[in-house]
Length: 306
Image (tube, rainbow, N blue to C red; front, top):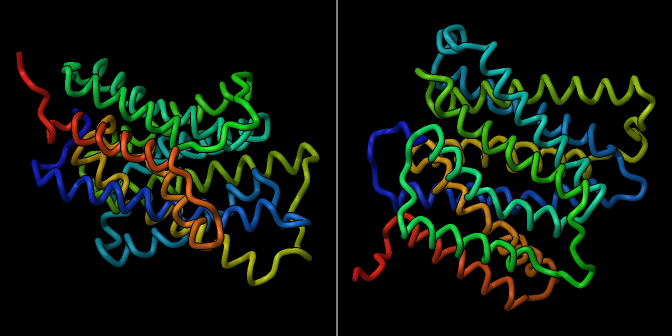
């Protein structure tokens, strides 16, 4: 399958994947600070570029200090930048999709990521779709839709939803290729390399947006609070969470790791609860179904045999 690392405890790999999702969810309120500010210091395309540059600036020195300059020289930078470009393209699709729909719609579409990951492994790796995996996928997708939360405003499956789906497919491909297309690199090296590629491409998108006359940064609204929020969003929500995610994908494969992403809305609800938000039993039920799906799909809960 996608996993290339030697066999290790599935418990540790699942805990690493869970930690990745938790850190990513914890960083989302920081993004809200930047997005909901009035006036906003950075428009969405520049915000994505800023977080990618922040993440690359964090990871690259750590990679150099941990593994030496020779690891950076031996790396296939052309291939790494190409894979990283997919990360940046997926982020751009998500921004454009969310502007045409809603965060709830984006979360609902993202719940299909395990199915996309499984499809890739069936096509490219010859994975067999067992009853455990099929039931685990169903539970995860249903749980992910429930965990997405408030549907009072309805769901609109239009062009915005298609852009969100394109984002999910692009991110899934980029995650898989980060593990499979960069042999000889550690998870730290492959993550750092692809995030640098994402930073380069994200900056190119930002410059293109300015060249086409789209809004630029509002420097007067950009203070220490906004800079701190950008650092949390970039370093926590991208650099650290992506590193843990790639470690998990290398051990579990993209399909099994993707099951965890449907828990993210529940984690966000828990963090917002600490900030004065409200508890949702529907989201809690969805999280329980996703967790059950993870256990069933990985065979940690065996189905009864006839």
